Image (cartoon, rainbow, N blue to C red; front, side, top):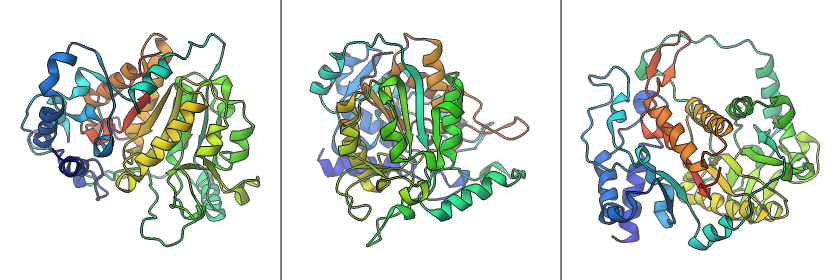
Length: 394
């Protein structure tokens, strides 16, 4: 196949993972036939070489970097329409023999990178569990909004049919059609604060002591922290590529605006600044850096930032492939780190695989009465996260 043909197939499959609508009923069916066709082209001809393994280390490029191979079915299956004759919406996807059912998949920039990462000696020092940065504030208007939300009474959830339930997907920058853009135009990510708190609790650490949220998620805080003390470092914010903001010439992570946080800097942690950090991390989590955003621009950001974090001293990076569903993402990441906390020998890639399967086979989204309203078995919910780097260590 030509690169163009592969890109067409991948973008077609991604339409079900990046729905344009805002409700559960707007999520398109994932094209299992096309996904299996991609499996037949890429992996089926060489099954004898890899099927007996438990994990796969994959080096992909181009459009294939925009689709996690875990979502490829290893067997053909014709699915019924969502909701038709099913107890739960999307429950039919539980019957699909996803590659994730049998194998943990990790991405690598190159075979040489794997060799380099595997040569890093295991750390014997006592490190703290985590440090996190999330829900940065990009303007004074957002700060005012955040303060008002903090003091507002909780919303009352009204009962609606499953089809009409709102999708709570994480916001992404919409800058493509703008001639000029600055930090203040980036949308807030308030749901990332809850995700970070859940991860901290899963690791049995005090969120108030390890999380830097809102205006605390700024350049000065990152640069002044001794990041080499932490096993897990989480940046729950936007990843940007050159040209997305005025004057931006290299990939960067967006942090709180300096005039709002009252610190020095430009509100961007650039690739050059990441290279200057000193890390000793098992994980760096880029929880809102969507690698599939802007027709691959996010992939460019994750690739550049990933190389910088590897150089700075991390063994693996966890990135998102599309704008995640907030509730499913919180469940998945919390479960992932809880599994590793309970079993120190559990490999990173296997922990992610087990957390994916727990979402697929679990009860799904529940209402305030504890009733399951729809399943998380659709790949939009369980497949957004990918490990780049060494997934084999604990």
